[in-house]
Length: 333
Length: 262
Image (cartoon, rainbow over all chains, first blue to last red):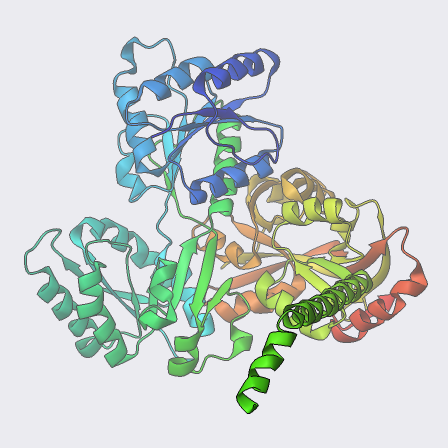
């Protein structure tokens, strides 16, 4: 993986392929002339990460200087960046960045750099990922079920109260965290927790889905982003046939799952990455006010979402009128 | 004989065929070129005549839906709708569209534009701002002690300044880009109240079962909508486009009517 560091100018797009040496030189220079707080963003390559950084850059303007580090497999570049930049705070995007920073913290006993506060985002089950890390808080990447369900209810021309969820046990905590906020909106989560590993997963998944759709008569399904439960074979052999049979609206977390030809997801609710960057800025500003202390272990929900509607299914199955779809960001038909 | 004559004719005309063919090709090519050139000229002339309309108007209608409806309502205008202030201000600065529709405070950040029409709702060009909270109203004496959710429609510092001006003191703000994202702020207690225009309240009351309580803020109001053109634009040349906007956009912008300033 390519490693580089880049000083951001306001509204500058993120470049690629600059040599580490040249950039480190630029960093030294900037450190000399800059009196602004500096933030180091540690992230993998990818457009969604670039969008989040863009949100930060647009929002912070020239008040902070933002540097980026695209992580390589070793942590040497992270150590080097932290030593040279001496950031006021770090923003960790994705679990790889969180793990990298955790490893650096573990080995930082002999370092001359005192660990800056960290804000973690865009990581899977980020609360678990940052557990035990000092001066680190996070923004959850999983969209709260209540947020998605409120949007579905405002669109679909049918009552939605019981929301069925099939998940593996590693998501037990996440589902429980969602239960209370759902209740306040009169949504009842009815969940089926499957073991994390099982050679009978397909049968267990089918049984759980049938139980929800037939016995519990849920009004909608919320599908977690779990690549085991959403494997192509489970999707084609279990999920799609059941959804087609019972015609219940399905909330998914991946746009591809709401493609009309798939005949599966009704509404995809995804994180708005630019807005996630802006949300991270709010935490950075709070940290600055609190003398670079953050609420260790705290996890904020993602506030902004991007909504994609499978218009073909919504019209054919639920007779959704267009005037209910004003808040949709993208239509698939 | 017949066979010979048949043979002779092609023998005599053989060199002529490619020449005529070439001439015909050249003529056809010339015609095609002329038609294409004419098409390009007409298209450019058309493009010059089509006015550009940029819109940044935070509402519960997302930009793709807004753009589609606005394009249908104003067929003579090339419409672009923005969802973020930063994108709108950057593109307006670089592209200099002929007409813009936005919120009045946003216009103040765009100096080369002058207002031509103001949106009117319930007989006023301004609408009251209110606070929405869950279960209990907001104590206005302790506003500076709570966190307010607000739609970021002027950038961070601009929005902070705007709210501080209206409420008389700097506030602790949590910002979102879209109006509908204010609801999760209340749900998850990321803000104890959200600061919105009164016209937005029915939307929230419709989509949520939370017990939303309105706190009215006496004397706190902001402009609803404004339509402006570039300073140097000849008023006569743009009159028809403004008339189209005046007639066809009020429902979409959720105003009662436009009040012309010219």
